[in-house]
Length: 254
Image: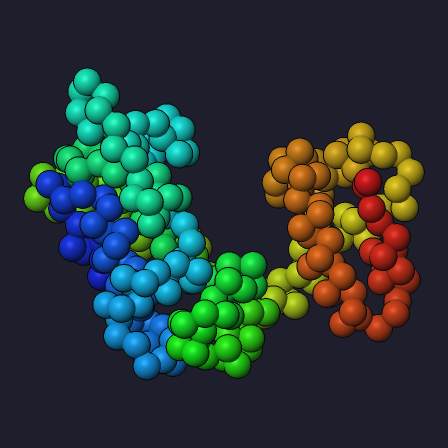
């Protein structure tokens, strides 16, 4: 996260978005070397030979606008001159020179995905990969953090961080910290599910109960069921086999 914020702090109008993408590959190289995931190779050589590629296989971000992945990421002027992403980084969604008023994402990541790492297990660079450490990290999958930034004439505005530390904190109500298990146990959504008698009644009945018992719109509660079910299962495993537990196990709107 610190490397991400450090990169954002350097952003300014007049610089190519591609440059920032490459700069973050250099920062990824520093991390890989620092934590001995790649060994016996300079950071410059890692980037030059694309050893950072399997760890950050995507672009650093994209333009934001009327669409999430907004149009004209490759348009270089008003006449629509196209500049494709570099062959080395085909998934980069923007090659434009930054200008005041542009809104973009900065969302680097670091991943440990076998299908991307597999080609590197053989060949001249294989010996530089610390495969034992990589295997230990693979179960975590990876991490990616997104910041949404606005380019101004003389500075860059990070809307993501400013919202978190400014606007949201102005109306958040302080509360004593609780554990995940405690939070799950007091959830009104779970209470509602625990008192639903099986799946009879289908979607309509569940939506009615959602509307009566949850602080969220019924349709959102319905969509959230599949995600919540994983949390429910974790909670059920911690309970004592009560009738409530058996009811939670039975409940499924599908």
